[in-house]
Every structure is written in structure tokens, then in C-alpha cells.
Length: 361
Image 1 (cartoon, rainbow, N blue to C red):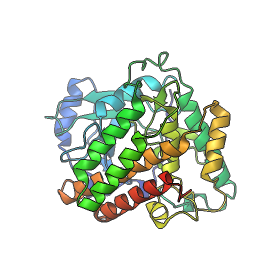
Image 2: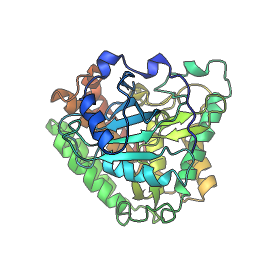
Image 3: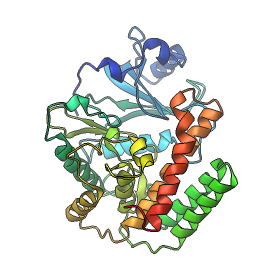
């Protein structure tokens, strides 16, 4: 598959001094032993953006390539799984044109200190946070992006996992119950204080009391949102869907609920607007209800239990921010953006509780 390439905006890459965090000579020696050539004459630059996994632009066999690795420090159970992600990317790219191909996986931590993978590089436009400045003058952009997000998610969920060679990915039977139990356990590990612990127990108990619909499992991304898509700058069509380290098979409504957990609206509580993960508070973006209805129309999925699934997605999201804050406290990351994540995580958990009792839309 031919890969489109263009000069990256300087804002997409960190300065070389901020990117040199591995023994690149050792990496070059390892890749040479695998029949690949790493060009050390070109500066290795880390991509900006993202809060966890690290991505670097490297030149392998004369082609721009992404080296992807997990963060430093103790990692939450099941997170940042490079082996899982590589398996998905090395197979799913044949089924979906907007999935970049996994090229190589290494679990030998003696090379750069952590497992890593090499991924096909796809150039394009990345819209981060709430910033729409790159689309200035495009009045149609919010509507186009709203439709694109829903259609891309529907396309992912239409893939036959067996034909893609991923029929044994994950354990779809009992997916929702395990998700509730798993995130409750992870939350207990990062909940500081009696009030936060009680809040988590309350939401966990509520989720366990819900009746979730039975659906045929599909492939799931598990962190589907706008800044995990690289777009064709003119059409805003997806060029690449990235960040697959939590990919699995399970209830497709979980992916939709995850997208909606990031989809803030102008009248939402302050914490959702402070999240600033997508620019959906800008005029012209669809509201969550329209997103859900469009997804149901495209896929034929029964979304009758979407509220409960959205609570689960918000429950997970709040805990993720608490986990990220814990990594900052432990010194595994130095990014001061993480300093406020404990408060943000707790606020998102409060919103999950409000959604569960019907006091927030």
C-alpha cells in the first residue's frame, strides 16, 4: 500500500533535544540484525501530543516510519500493550484502508528498555483538543467531521474479525461485566481518600445493577476520538486510525460510548468542557443524541442501553486520568499537564454518577 507523505508541521514534532530518550545506536544494531536499516544521519524526533505512549519519527529502509513504545514506570494492568497493538495493525490494515500497517514488534527490553513496534507512517492533518485553527474558513468542517467520525466507527464495526485473522482477539463473552470489574479494580488502586473510594463504589454498584443488551461482538478500538485519526487535509477523510494498544473484540456500543464520553457540548458541566479532548463545543458540531442516532442508522445497532454504557465509559475515563496523575506523582512522567489530572478524574467520575441518576444529559 502506498503511503502518502508530506512535510510535517514543526508543531507536530518535538525538538531533537527533547526526543533523544533511547539508545538509538543499539536500536540500529538490533534492526540491522533483523535485516532493516535505521538511518541515524537523520534526527530522530518525537511526535508532540498524546499523554501516554511515545511515538517517534524514524527513517527505516529509507522510509519514514513510526517507532511506538509505552511510557516509563509501572504501568496499569493491560495498558500500553505493544504486542496486542502490533497484532491488530499487522492484520487489520488489509481490511480497512485507514489502518496503518504494523511492520515489526520487539519484546526484547535490552534494545531500548521497553517493548516497541514499528508502524507504517501516514501523513495528514491531526486535530488536537479543541483547536480548529487549522480549518479556519471551513464552515462545513464541524458537520463533515461529525459525519466522518460516526461513519469511520461504523466501518470499523462492520469488519469481519475472522476474515481479518482476529477472530481470537480478546474475550468478547462477558465483555461488559469484565470491563466493570476491571475498571473498578484499577480505580481502587488509584483512589486516594474515603470520598473518592465511596464515589467509585457507588458507580461500580450502579453499573453492576444494569441490564446491558446482548449484541454480536465486533472489533473495538476502545479509545476512538478525533485526535486518534489522521485526516486528508482537503476532504477530512480518515488516512489513519492510530492508538490501538487497547483494541479488542466486544460490545460495539462501548466504542460509541467512549466517543461520546469525549464529545463535550456547550452546556455540559465544566469538567467535560475542561476535558478539551475534541472541538465539539464549537458551533456546527452535532450533539451526542444525533451522533448516537446516526450510528444506529448506519449499523442497525440497538442503542437502548446507551446511557448505562456511557456511564461505564465515563467511569473508565475518570479512572484513566487518575492513573495518569499517579504516573506524574511517581515521577514516571515529567509533564506538568498531569498535575491537575486527579481533580479532573474525580470530576468526570462525579459526572458519571450524575448521568446514572439522570441529572446530566
